[in-house]
Image (cartoon, rainbow, N blue to C red; front, side):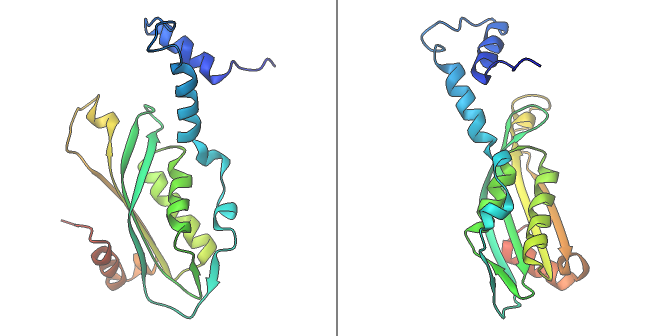
Length: 189
């Protein structure tokens, strides 16, 4: 089976099919720049949770909620290859392990740097924290704007999409869920 052309060649061909002159000054280096950009925006495919967590799970006698909020999220919609961006709020109630605080935003980035839908991204983050930290409960909320809704299609500029994944205690116990929503300052109205 022959090797596919390099990504920069595919981008050059796409620009030509759009009617552009890929030799003009402004576009001469665009194929290689765009290829590098897409590699960066999808680098999550080359990452995994084991390497990101790198043993940063610590046994601690702490059973109160831990919330990391306003984690910036930048991803690409798998349907249109346009960005969606916003904030991610993560909370969990440890059983006997806590996660190094910097590792949670890195997990968020790992999944966001793949072609995504917001719903799956939210679920993947929650399930990964549940798998590795084995908390009593975990909650993830993402609030994002999607350029595929803003620039094309329905063209609604102020639309925000909110998704949540609530596992364990956050799903089963109304008080825990309410505490998480309050600490994350997520408006549920």
